[in-house]
Amino acid sequence: MHSSPLPRLGGVAIFLSFFICMAVAAFWEVRHPQMHSPQFLRTMVRILIPAGLVFLLGVYDDLRGLGPYFKFTVQGIAATMLYAGGLRIINIPVVFGDRVLPWYVGWAFTVIWVLAITNAFNLIDGLDGLAAGSALFSTMVVFVVALLNGPTLVEVMTIALAGAILGFLRFNFNPATIFLGDSGSLFIGFLLSALALFGAVAVARTELLLEDRAQFAGLRQLLRDVGAADQLALDEHLGDRGPAGDRGEVLANLHV
Image (cartoon, rainbow, N blue to C red; front, top):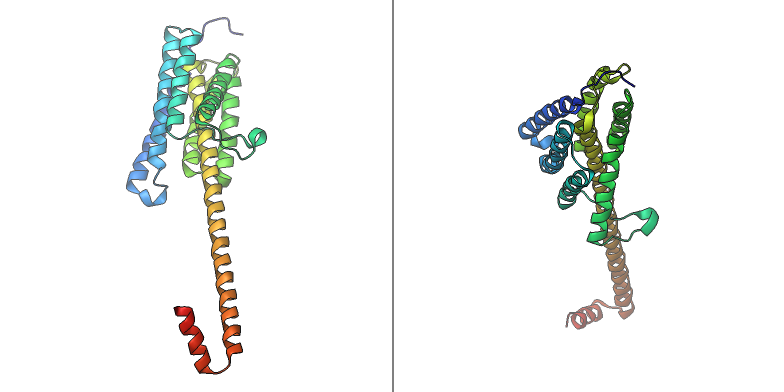
């Protein structure tokens, strides 16, 4: 495609731009904690630490070169960090229904998901604008979904990532002057897989909370109905006993 070698460290610019945006978001959260969820900063850290590990892996691979087994191992460790941080596949309704998966099955599916999405972007980083354009489209899709029914953190991180990719695309379109490299493609793919996991977990927790509240409301209404029925039966029974004295006797017997 190109007659001369091109630099493959475009991911460094994307990572730095994204990191600056996240630093601003973290500073805003500290100054205005009432505007976001209490888990905002904690979840951000749980995503950024393994994402930074994958980014460093990509930088080293761009500079020195690494074997596939070592790269998969480090990516698996980063995926396990996500799982340990609560970003995991809990169930697959299409296949298993509402059944919650055992931890080792959920861990395996989580690692497979992260590795698949992470390396999908890495494989297409070779044609002008292909990987970055696909990443921008995917990021905007996740942003729109989060905007409709997702957590605020996903909105913030996806719009920041989209802005960084959009600025990079100017230099990656045909004729490209720089490529994402492993540092960029692995970082973007890993980040999108993590945000998808977090969005799915957040939605599942919200649905569970709403379901619990609905069940509690139904139980409370049932108790009210039972109480009303008991009161009505008591009133009818007292009415059948006639005078007030008899009613007092019935109440005394019920009390005993």
